[in-house]
Image (cartoon, rainbow, N blue to C red; front, side, top):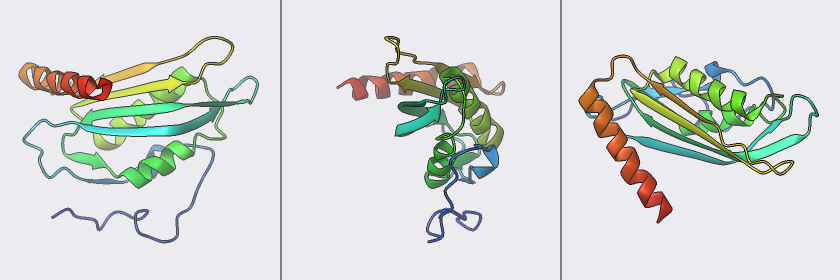
Length: 159
């Protein structure tokens, strides 16, 4: 059974929403119940918003996260609150995606992490940054297995 004793956001009935200053500490964790086996989690936020750091105009997009957990997993409600904290945060798309990746690595130290930002077109240009983080401890066979799982998963998403 999953240990939920350290989770404070999920089911609390007293959710605090912040719309600026995203912080890795907002991400709550739980133990991976299957740490010996590589497997992949997909998390998709279809309503991601942040502000252009120059114009302060809102930018809208989708954040797609795939990770192969090691010892820890990120709790989804805390991730939602963390991503919501970008709403009034001024940063370029590329920075947002890399910061999300770095914050997740800091908190859960996954075997493999992929963060993709699919931002709405502005000024005639679509910006779609991709950040990858790979644990130095990841073995070649584990990496191949994870990449194969991601390939199958991506093919299923395309239909």
